[in-house]
Image (cartoon, rainbow, N blue to C red; front, side):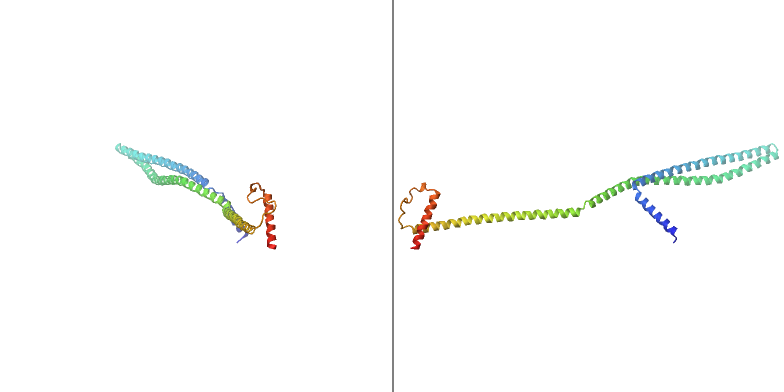
Length: 259
């Protein structure tokens, strides 16, 4: 294969590819209808010319036939007058017109057949154009729908839905994790509160037991000097005096235990 053939094929391939990509179905359909209508106009003009030629040929044939008939009548008239030479001349003229009429009749038949064929082709072309106009609207609608669908798919592809969905799922998991941590913190807070109350309750039991022990051990001891009788002035004691009394009782208890 020569270099020129390869370059030529490459150029034609690139040109065809560019043309194919540049073709818009809607515009091409419209232009095709315009081209067919132009062909229809030319076909109608050709049919009109053929019919005009047929009419002229028909007139010539009729005229030649009329002339032949007229020379026959003249030949008969010359014979009636006894002029055979004139009758022979008339028949010669009649023969020429008859031959002309016969030739015109053959041409007329051919022209008539051609006109009939042109008329059939014209009707077929009109039918095809009518059908093409109907299909054009349908094809344009389908092309528009296909183009819109292609644009939609391109938009969806460019949106990177997979990545967005993955991010959405990650955020959903994060929210669930936050809710779990919040619930765990609430449960731990409740446990601590219960523990605090349990400690307070257990501490109260120890204090009561300690107080009962103090009372039993100090039951027979004499009141300290200057101390107020039990129950007297209790309402006037302050928290500081209560702590001092407790400390004194503890000291007394220690001394008794030491003895």
